Image (cartoon, rainbow, N blue to C red; front, side, top):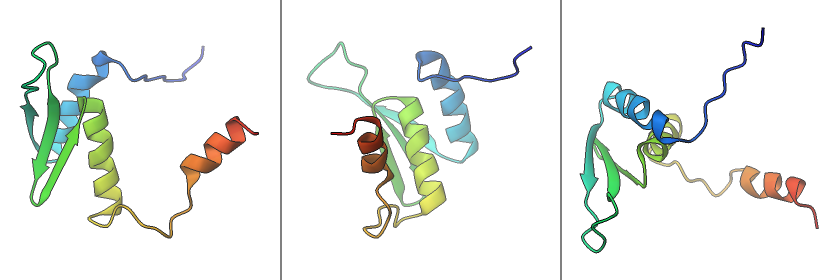
Length: 93
């Protein structure tokens, strides 16, 4: 029997993501899209001096993890660029 767990980016992950965010102390809200009533709007998470904004709860949780791990100075110029390295490795010239 294979015990591998696979979780994909899908709406069934949204509520668990919101549960984790609330457990981390974030207040969650939605900024309605005033130009497009068919669109739900942007998801927001606020805690202390931090405001995170994303298209969906799972992306919001990713931003929270990024901030929790790296702090207020989450973007550092001296960091290795894994993003570009992985793309270049996957799609070489």
